[in-house]
Length: 57
Image (cartoon, rainbow, N blue to C red):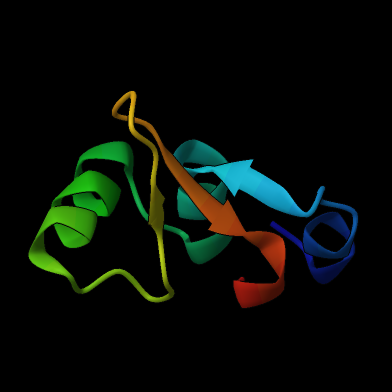
């Protein structure tokens, strides 16, 4: 993603969008979340989803 695309993101995005912004593939992103090595804090939702604050990207 370009800086302009990242700047235009909503306040909170799903993990797929964050992965794209960091240049991570889907499997690598989820693996890094579970290992605690994702490049920024990740919010784990009760239903099993993940969200990332765009300010952290």
